[in-house]
Amino acid sequence: MIGRQPDENPAGIHLPLDPLPGHTSRGRLERVLRRGEFAVTTELNPPDSADPEDVYNRAKIFDGWVDAINAVDASGANCHMSSVGICALLTRMGYAPIMQIACRDRNRIAIQGDVLGGAAMGVANMLCLTGDGVQAGDQPGAKPVFDLDCMSLLETCRIMRDNGKFLSGRKLTTPPQLFLGAAINPFAPPIDFRPYRLGKKIAAGAQFVQSQYCFDVPMFRTYMQQVRDLGFTEKCFILCGVGPLASAKTAKWIRSNVPGIHIPDSIVKRLEGAQDQKKEGKQLCIDIINEVKEIPGVCGVHVMAYRQEEYVAEIVDESGVLKGRQPWKREIRRDDQLVADRLDHILHDEITETQVDMVKTAH
Amino acid sequence: MSEKTPAITQATLVKKAAPKSDYKPADVSPQRRVQRSFAVRLWSVRHSRLLEWFYARFSDMFLLLHPLWKRIGYGRVEGPIKFVEKRVKGFMFDCRMCGQCVLSSTGMSCPMNCPKQLRNGPCGGVRANGNCEVEPDMPCVWVKAWEGSRNMAHGDKILDVQKPVDQSLRETSAWLRVTAQAAAAREAARNVPKPGAPA
Image (cartoon, rainbow over all chains, first blue to last red; front, side, top):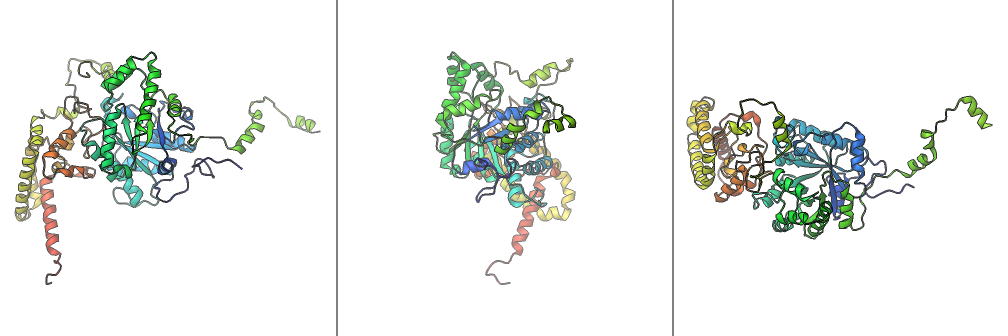
């Protein structure tokens, strides 16, 4: 018999899982979170190419270390392979992608179509974002759309899922089954409004949230305290965003150029003082994970290691957040393996057999 | 910190590579180019309590005049009312005439002035000094909205989830729409027989 991993459809890895009571999606991430396990998600650096192998190679390094992979939607307003395309490729191979939808590039007509298309391909998780302004990217002359905002986008997806209707009220034959996510940034002003904004997002339909990079743990702790006092941790899974900084120079650059990322001076000093700044950046990330995982209400981490994706596995391993659990891993089925072992040589051997030869060898 | 060192982003590089000419327009977004300074808008946010009170009286007055509007015809008064509304709200709040005014839920800070036109709260890109991500020299519309809402009696309306903007209502009068809707609601309430009252 084929040894099956948890959260895998026996009929095929690309197929949705069996529906469970209390679950709104048929994906892996929701199951992991609802079981109360500490979830790990990460971000795939989208390729600037039309080769599917580029996506698969970039996803492969996360194998067995993460529960879901974010497919970013032109983050920073820089053009890359679309999140729908990446999700189409990843779902074929059984990965659990989180499809990011940004409001910057598409209006409500296009977005609702993409939600249906994504769900039909087996995308179970969708993350609703506002998106960076076009001025931040490589094509600042583009027309910013912002027809919906993250909140009305969440509500739109929720209406499609729960009421089985488009925003217009027109009925869907089969509503999408989704686990809806949103982003939070506890580190940007107005600080005292931020917890209430999470409440708004939950009211609009958010079931899980991923935070912006957390480098200021005390600030995050205060935020979580407020969120707990408002009772939001019972209604929503909160994943804390973390990531390694490559050097003190990168930290300073990010601080002054990337909007919304707050890096305290102590972090920059710690990196500057280190012999090997890259290693220190990784260690810093592990230390932050170890601190935030103890905060009540934090259900997981979202590891964003832009251009350092190879470190994700090490960071997850060394921080020990999985507690021995192994997330789903793409494996060759045992019967396929058997066939491959026996017959793989025919792909490489340079034998051209004629029928006459075959008759001779048979005798 | 970020003010001293000029930020070199991808966009800066793209701009630098663009062909040069003697005409150099101000380096702000197109939305800012049609707009004056925002001193008056900030005054309105600072006096949100007063404006809230005034707005309540004002909408009552408009509702009282409902029979008049109806006599003349809403369609016919729309032109002049819109003319006044556009100029008054344009001066006070830098109004964009979306036709679905939510000023009372957003601390008297018009959310359509946000470069992303967010109607449900600030994005994650607000700078540490409370300025906008897209316009570094403009205070974030939503930081101001939160401040303004804290002064208001019904400031917690900022926590309601707003529906997406109906773009087909652009350049129409929100005052008349609200009045007509309130009048219709009043009619409906009047037509429902009160429980216990003789039929």
